[in-house]
Image (cartoon, rainbow, N blue to C red; front, side, top):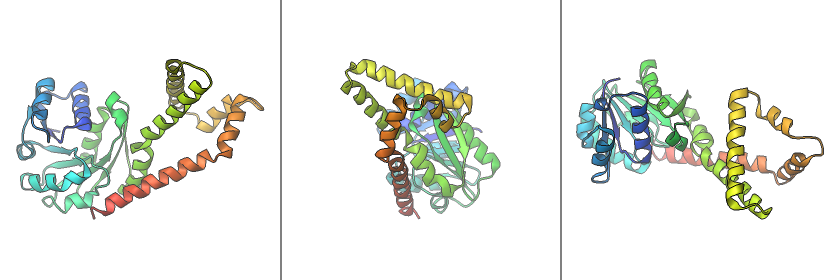
Length: 268
């Protein structure tokens, strides 16, 4: 894969950087840039990688990873465009920015891959979806996927599905945290000390997720195994159904997907 440059090494950029180091990528093959003065030097000292300017990094790299906010992408691409060549792979982790928008602002023939990561990458349990642009072939796609595998799992999707990916897994951790907050509050209302309620909920969440992954059973089957006729779980689920919680979740994710599409429309 050659030299990888991470442009915009904030939280997600550092997450990717540290994952690559842990996965065995030589530090000599990694370059970082950062918007805040001194940030790149801090990362260079911590991880043993090189800290360069955006243009220097683009010149030095075979693979250029863009990890900036969507509103900052235009300025960054304009800055590096003359320093990117047709042999480069550009991987974008910015939400809502289509590959076509990047391709139109980079030299002809540059391979672009769009990625939607999520924050559990911070603990090597990320879920990322990759989509190729017009000039990206299977080799480029695998190179991009290999980068993201350093801190989680990767799936390939058609770019038209990236709004749905954003709604489901990109924003998904927030929905889980929201439910966990509610369950902890319920525990406190029912008289449990907050630390106890928190431990009960977090371990229950971890255990349930592990069951789904390791058993491969459909969540409906697992839910039914917990739900005895006329029992406590059935009483709780009845309340959730009465309050249309399932429908509310679907509506919420549709809203997130629509918002992702709106953001993408601003970069067409």
